[in-house]
Amino acid sequence: MSKNVALSDIILEIHVPDFNIVKDFYGKLGFEKVWEYPTKEQSGYLVMKRHNSILAFFCGNEEVYNHSFFKRFPKTTPRGYGVEVCIYISDQDIDTYYKHVLETVGEKYIITPLEIKPWGSKDFRMVDPFGYYLCVRESGNIMHK
Image 1 (spheres, helix red, strand yellow):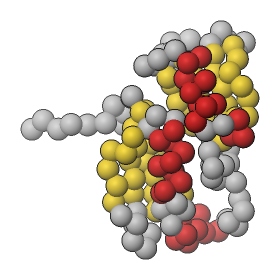
Image 2: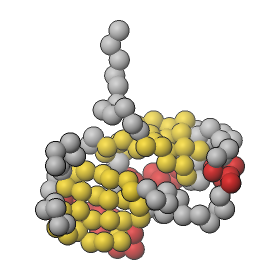
Image 3: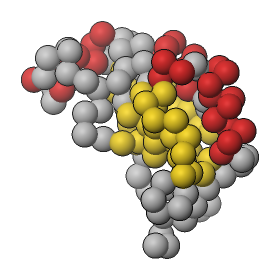
Image 4: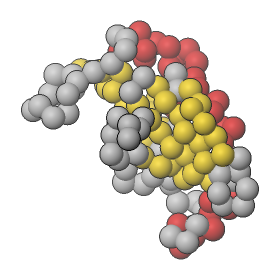
């Protein structure tokens, strides 16, 4: 039996209180909605894709704060603390993409502007409206040093 499967065995699931903000912000980054299960209590789910990058979002309402694990933390805890979400841009030039992000999302979300890193590749760092830390990199192969 043949199945269509995701390009990775690990899918990042980001817990957020509002899918509309997600669709607007990540839409400006070039992500498109693949499918969405309507928010109902704690069961909303949204999958978005940009080229080969897939992000899944859970809940979509205030019930996210009552999740069995996450409810032990205050609502004011920065979302994604200690996690860096890396997005590789392989379908266009990183300079062009960075300019697009500045024009559509704005500088207020940029933490570190586009620059060449000591290891020789370009990236920029930003934060999404919920506080998740994003590293946007030019195309590369993480499997090779």
